[in-house]
Image (tube, rainbow, N blue to C red):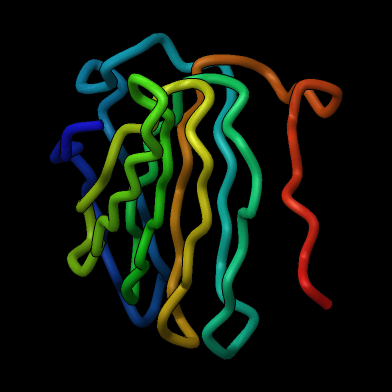
Length: 129
């Protein structure tokens, strides 16, 4: 999982709204799905599951702390990626456990995925609640 800088253009215009665009030619894999996640007006933690395909997580606004864990040669390797500027991103391999914290009330991420949604293949980690 190496950090990647994705070409993201953000045009904030008070009168016309926000335009966010990215060039898919910079993607490290063919994109079949994308989804957008935004904080609900306060910081929040999401994820808590294993990715079912390759994903590229791209920051749109605010900041996000991406925590990942992968098994490599019978050892769990945990990494944190702080996305703090629009366009910062990280690439996740299939089978990566992900948890992410949208750190500000206005944090937003865009996730590009190499496959369609597969709910049966997803493994959710039970919470301690």
